[in-house]
Image 1: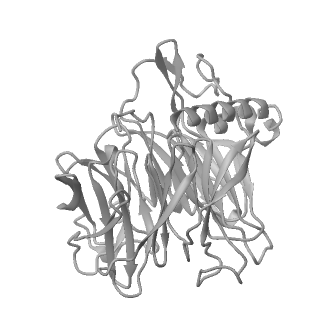
Image 2: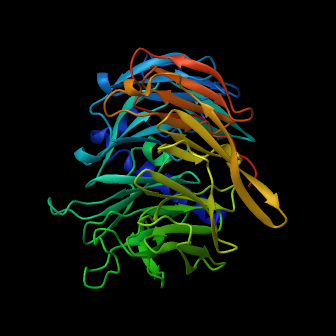
Length: 456
C-alpha cells in the first residue's frame, strides 16, 4: 500500500503540474508547485526557508458573524492575519497534508481553500520548511452538494451527494496538497444518480459507496447506498474493479486503518479487509444486543495507529460509543459515563491514537483510552475535563463547541463561542494549559501545519 500510495502521489503531482497552465484563469496563477526554492508570493507575505520554524503549527478560526477567518501562530498564540471570505462554509477541514483549510460550501456546490502558509519540501537528505502569510487562494473545486470529506495518508476524497431536485448526480474527487498547490484537475468518479455516500482513498485504490436502483436496493432510505465498490486508478481515472459481495443497507459513516475499511449499516457494520493482491474480502458484524432501540452505528472513526475503530450510535438523548475490533470481529459498548442529556458535538482520535476524545454540548471533554489485556485491547473511560464555566444558556443561536487536534503533539484546541476564546488542552496531563482570547464567537476551527511522522 505504501508503494502504491507513492506512485499515486507522483501521478497526482504530474497531473497538477500539467494542469497549472490550463487553469491559471481559474486561479492557478497565484500558487505554484515549488521545488527547493521558496514560494513566490505577494510583497506583504513573509517567506522563510529554513529547517526550524513554527513547530506548533497554525490555527484556523472561523468568524461566521463577520464573514472572515483568522489564523494564529500556535508557537506564541499571536494572530497572523484576518482573511475575508466569500461565503460561510457549512464545514471546515484540514487538507491531506494539513497545509490548507478546505471550506465546504455545500449550498453553493463549491469547495474553497485557505492556504495556512506552512509546508515542507524535500531537499537532499532533509526537508525544508516554508512559511508565508495565510490567504484565501484563487482556486476552488465544483460539484453538486459536497458533503463528506475524508483524508487518509495525504489524500482526500470529497464526496458530492448530487441533488435530485436539480437533476445532478453524485460524484467523487480525489485531491492532494500538491494538486491544490498546482491548481490541478482532480481524478473523479461520476455516478448516474444522486447518493448520500462516502469514499475512502487508499493510494491507487478508492473504496466508494454504490447506490443501486430502488427496486434492487436493500436500504429503507433509497438515497443511502447499500453497496461498496473498489476502484483502481488507471491512466488518470478510476475504474471499478470489484463490488463487495456483502450488502450494507442504509450505508452511512466510514473509516479506515492500515488493513481495514469499515462502513456503518442499519443492521451492523461492514468490514472490508485488503488482501495481498489488492482485492478485498467483506464480512458483516451484526448490531450488538447492547445497541439501544431505534439506533444504528452511523459514524465511525479510525486511525492508522489503532487496530480498533470507534463507532457512534444515537437515539433521542442517548449516545452510545462502540469499539469495533475487525480482527476479533467484535463490537463492544464503551461506558463513556456521560452527564445527563449530554450530546457529543465533536469527537475523534488524538495524535498517535493514544486517546479518543469526546466533546459534548455541556462543555466537557471526556477521554477514553486503550488498555491491553492479554491479546485484547480494551477501551474505557479515563477522565472528564470541564472546558467552560460559562452559562450554557448564553450559547449563541446555532452555535456550539468545536475542537481540533494538533498533528505534531498531544495538544487539543476547543472553541468556546460563549466565552469567545480558544481553550488549549494538554492531552498528556488532561489539563487546560492556556487560551487564545477572541472578540467574537468562533464557529469552527482546524489545525494546520507540518504533521509529524510517527511509527504505526
